Length: 291
Image (tube, rainbow, N blue to C red; front, side, top):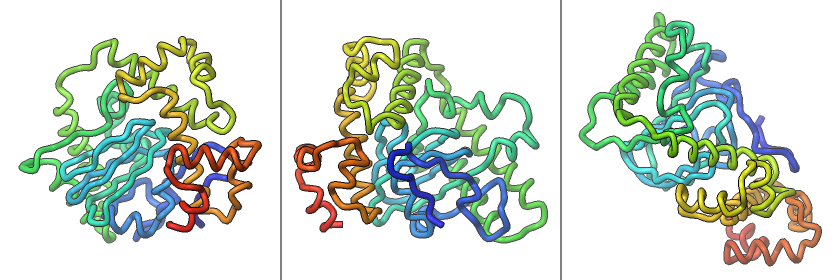
């Protein structure tokens, strides 16, 4: 069954069991990106996970939005997501790569301690993406081995998969040689908190002041923070989140435009139509017809 968000709820949080592979339910998963998005088309809409995720791009282009920040997808991009982060992507038709999922327990079974939580790419103070050069020959072969290992039952598959995974993470961590400054870390943390609040309240709260109060900062501070880190205003991000959900409901549900407006907290469907057109250049009806 396709996991989707019910109207009026935050983006869904998907479990590893939502992604069955060639074996019975396992605490790890790997597939080619192009096959993964065909098998599970709902992953194109904003959602979170209760597991860790790696995304490696080998060909093509697109964008990947993680906790409000939109990053370029290009060959050599390697993304890292921790449980609870909300993301979605827009992939060009020619995009190719690999996705890798694993639970914390799976990794910690062989590598206990704080190592998993200490990796810089799973820390909000660091970027969740590495842009590796096309000449890189360490990590890509390991990810290809992860996929080959996962494709069918093999002796000690879990142990071998976990070993390749561990090497991928350790080698990737070497690319984060410079620690984030305290100021940068605080800014990234506040942006992530803003993103989490926005995912919870975008149907009912649309003013920058609302979110500033929840974050215990001033509206001017929140706007300045968003401009510095994301090159957008906090208001831009609020409107983008509303429009993203409106497009999801118009694309994936049978709700009428008036019902979509109601689910998003608009009391007047005509105002919702003007709002949607202001930020997309199309009416809701035209957007739905062009999908």
